[in-house]
Amino acid sequence: MTQVTFKGSPVELPGNIPSVNTIASDFAYVKRDLSESRLSKLLGNVIVLMAVPSLDTGTCAKETKKFNEKLANLTGVLGIVISKDLPFALRRFCEVEGIQNVDAVSDFRYNEMGKNYNIEMLDGPMKGLMARAVWVIDRDGKIVYSELMKEVVLEPDYDKVLETIHSLL
Image (cartoon, rainbow, N blue to C red; front, side, top):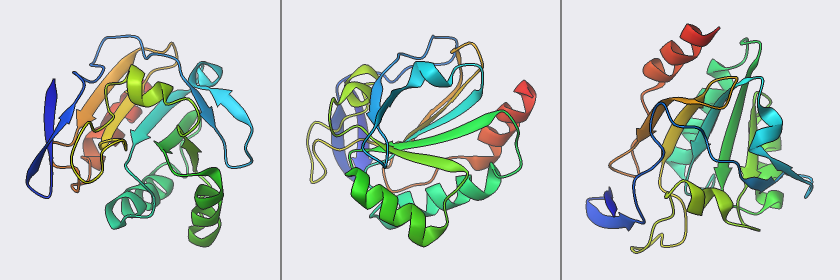
């Protein structure tokens, strides 16, 4: 098991998250219009995959807005933020915040991402939601950057993510 903290209190994850030089596991997700897709359909692009507990929290909202801004002018780069939020909430958030460069999607239906990536919190007040993590996946589906926030309320290292992205372009 892997442990993170939520506001200083320990939270268990089922195992290690996928690491650099491994192939990103495929998973199904639900889009804001209730249609479904899969991570594998995005291959051929550089993918920034962000797992967050909920876009209804300040840190998750801030992270999504920052990545929306930072990925705005990058051709061949797709940003995917995934949570267990319902598609209706994702659509509302994206419309209100003007999110156009990151696709907010949900793992509520199948929980494949949460399970495949060992990112689902097993205890604590946000049990069942995902901890915060970011992966950069190259065009062939290999993970080239992996970051698990040891404290769920902290933001990722945006500069390292962007440095990794630029090394692939």
